[in-house]
Amino acid sequence: MVFSLKPNIFYRSCHNVRMITVIGGTFSKLHKGHKALLNAAIDTGNEVVIGLTSDEYVKKNKVYPAVPYSVRYRALYNFMIKRTKRFRIRQIDDRNGNAPYEKDYEAIVVSPETYPRSLKINEIRVSNGLPPLKIIRVPYVLAQDLFPISSTRIINGEIDTNGRRLAPLKVGISTRNEAKINAVEKFVRRFVKNYQIIKNENYDLKTQQPFNEETMELATKRAMESLRDNDYSVGIESGIIYEKFSKRYYDVHYCVVMDRFGNVTRGMSSGFEISDHIVDRIKHDRTFSDAYSGHFSVTELDQAEGIIGKLSNGKLRRIELIEESIRNAFIPRLDPDFYDSTYTPP
Image (cartoon, rainbow, N blue to C red; front, side, top):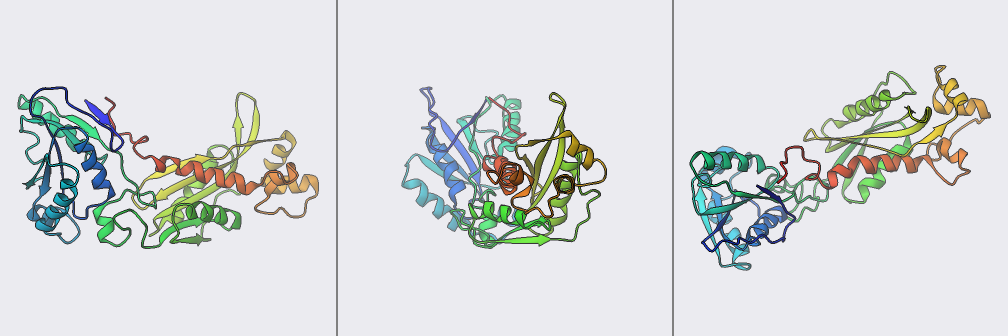
């Protein structure tokens, strides 16, 4: 049985016997994510047992210098004692501690990262004739940069314990279009004040006017070519999408966002219909801009205004569609637990 909880939501046992909620970790730098897990354990109403990994375990399994057990113990103790007296801290020498074998344990609190391990623990418990633990899964606590807060990132100087970005957030984008750069910068600025936008102009696309799936492919290629050693990379492509039901063509902006951890998210803008005679012109090796300009004898289109600006007499602008695609591509990053495919519902 799995419970996916936001922090500070109560789960209380209805049994009249001593029940224990267990939580384990290294807790090298006690941060907001750790505190969310600990608060969720306290809110079960059970006694809380915290398995704290030993110094030997940290030396073998962590990439950063070990924070002494005594320091980690004291930080945990000081946090817990202000909230409850019903807790114990135990030293453990492996990832599972005694959770697979302790009969008094009723529930386990985990993050999305440690959730798969809790499933393995329950498999071992069942094989040993013990009931499975109720799994309370607490969503990631995100830093300003929309990556989960972690001790590793704190020790490396990227963020502080509250998730505030310390090192500049590096965002790459493959484009020669200033409107796209401005749209990316505007979005990033909403979350992080300390950032760098790195423009990549060294890219080659097989076509200047993509249709249908080509739009997604070129946006992906743009993102791939600007990732490099950046935290994020953004690829934005406008293309012509055919919609079978209406049998009409629509102009749509497609955005792909990649990050240094290998995650990829995507989003689209709303689309507006294109007339058939313009589509015919586009199919003769022209871009949408060339076809529109040739038909209406327009000498130059402003990158931020775009064709939609001309069609709407300035009421709508292309940059708004670009911004919409970027926003939609980042939506899965605002609540990664909702989009996590490893989650097993209760």
